[in-house]
Image (cartoon, rainbow over the protein chains, first blue to last red):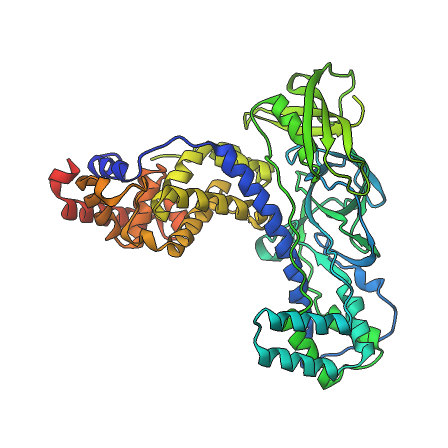
Length: 388
Length: 175
């Protein structure tokens, strides 16, 4: 008998589930596409959790003297793997939102990125985490409308009545303060946790999260997300892929109580018992919770270089139809990290099926560098440009 | 003892984190085994595919939470087994045991029926250990890591499973 194996049992089990051929690409692509949606949902939930935590603090009477210094200090955190920022819901981002960007010069200020695959060579690769919500500003009337809709959809009438009553008991200044705070979001979790309360962080000056906007279909202008004010709704947010130059440091203590402190900063006073009750109910029921956005994922990599090049327009997050992918001679100078022997260049022509407010519908051309991942035996998009 | 085939790639000190690339490489190297084990646990081929897709989704989405204390492959096996168990719980049909062909009951031959019933009668840990050992060819250490038990427990669990199957099926069915 082979260690731990009985040949007869093996034969019997073969009857039960015979071996069969599988296409790994199919499940891989679907799994990856699903993960983009999962990440977006999870990170929004972190915001709700912060609200709930702050509510508990307020309920317990934990308060610190307010100094009315405004929101700017509040947007800064000690956690280098997370980013806190404010959203301007009157501004909207129009443009593509690729799944992955290569940003060789990522740093504190503004930097340029190119569309790439998720496994592009180099140390500064970013992946799409989510886009900022486009939900309407928080107002008293908006919350009353939400309660009406929730009741019509079959929510518990007693709970709805309690929330209406709570809402009637709080002043407009409190609603305004909450509205300001709901414009603040926190995203995090890039470096993960490690032993003894440590985490891995990017090199100093390289942002863990970046907000990006399209310059053209191949090039994006990005900047650090942490501390950024007035991010337009729909802005694609990217998080840095770990690389060998990350360092392990002691994880900072959680600073979630800042939310409650900041609410009192904005109000200029302590919250009342009615406001506390409303706040707790709001956090518990989630009247303000918006729906989770979905982002279309694409296959990560495939076995043929031309087919891989055709994935580049699809990964832009906008509806396209491929017209052609034509092999081109490699230029003398290749983008960073690409080796001539393992790189192909394709001129990809595609139709943008609908204008997204930034890019016109119709025919577009991009140049796509694909590189062969020898260990994985697949081709992957490495760099996209408007010119060869 | 069988070694995990991708361990050399994944234990490189520079690549301890579970990046999209390492998850993809691990999955590609073992895709048939992942799907076969998931099929056996979930009870149907469709359920197995759903489970592996769900496990990949979770792995990609939560890769930054990978602590690097084991291999990415072991981490992925846990995700696949958990997802397949969830699929099984959601599906009432599989309470009777795996039916991977999805064929009508009268089309299933007696021998397979007997094996299915015998496997379904095993305690869950024995069933999972059998699937991981026979369908994925995992060694004791990898099975122990996946099931969250000690290595010695895996050996005993497999022995009990073998004895139980031999007793319930008899030599004529196993032959």
